[in-house]
Image 1 (cartoon, rainbow, N blue to C red):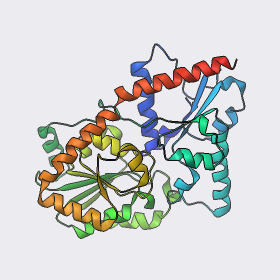
Image 2: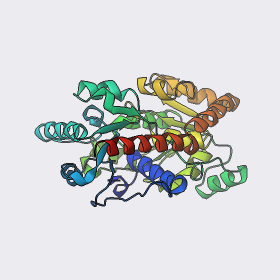
Image 3: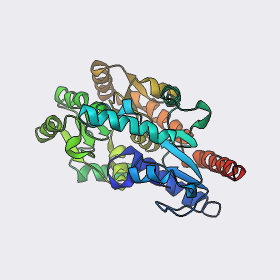
Length: 339
């Protein structure tokens, strides 16, 4: 495994990486020998991030069969980081060049397959494997535990809570989330996340000002440790991710796993992976209307809570463990045939 994903807190890539490492340790410690950022000879090299030193290592015969994990494409970085045009062009070419160095590509969303082919990659070398979360880390807590955490952070038990999670950036739909809080002062809005890319985050100054001047009913928690995030998913009445662009957001899977009803902007990529498990919204007006409807009649969320639990079973660690085992085993066989 080659990754620097866990060096920057609050990124979905890091969460997905940690989940996979834990899965391999828990289920297949006897079948696979896993080394992390180790440049000694290996049969398979799985690249989770596109660091320059990792790119350089792909030219070594010690790397065996090279597997690339695609968590983003150049076009999906728009609205996330701010780079001068010349630097951005060079970086985008580098991203695609890195992917083309791989013998096998894994995408977390099937809608990326055609886009990668358009960038010049071989369709036959691309495989879709969805993200997943462990129920050991994300699960529904007891009513008593939920009440205790609400009390700890100063939220009354009967207060309607809308929770969102992710980096503070335009792509995540923070502007709509903020506007919803301003429009609904009787509802508590909480956003867990911060500036993982620091000041190169697109729109950093504007969002920093929004955080500093948030309305009384909105809390920006900053980056929250994954071990603590489970509490926020559990105390919310509704999980909202108003993103304009996503791959396979870990936060949605985490919300599902905790049994939280989910409201999402209606994106094409969601239809390919989680259609039927969440409430769709086209824009701010749709989000606002559903939040108010749910606040007035909370029983309508019961059905969405059930859907979340169904989705959690589909994208569980147990289901994905077999898929990853079969994938690595098949890649190992191909690597051996090539020798």
